[in-house]
Length: 189
Image (cartoon, rainbow, N blue to C red; front, side, top):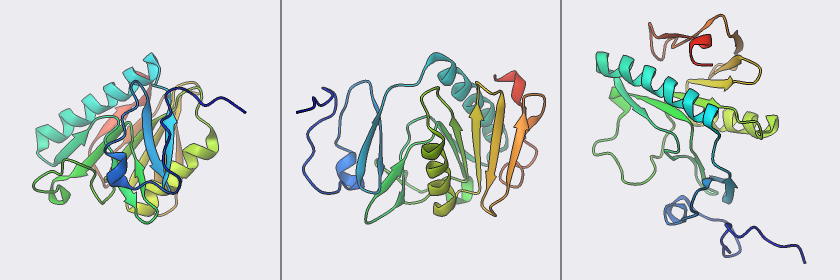
């Protein structure tokens, strides 16, 4: 009989809900819920964390200076689908001011952010990343940036189905979601 990893709790058979996910504690692991199934991942590496934090800082400064919304840190969960539930947690998220819930829920929101940033880790598989992008866009996210530090590029996905590759010598732009925002990619890689 194959051994189970020690950090994965024994879950009851069947699908988990977003409400149940709020009570799952797995120390030093990252978790998401995908179509009712718990997905457990190792923590991100140092470069991943620095890039995500740098982008979050630049976005938060831009957003705060203009009072146009809020930027959320890594591992903030968003319930992007129900029955079965999917809760995704981007590396960085932005929500426009007019969409912010008041009061902010203690748990997950029932909508997707306007902008999502995913920073690839060496162990990320392309199919999993594309599934995350599809979940974000299907739930209403207007702009998804997938930053690939190893290849020194970013892929920009839009709700209209278009995609752009941004090389290191160009800038990530906020487009209609964050008009005027630009971050030269090489400055964060």
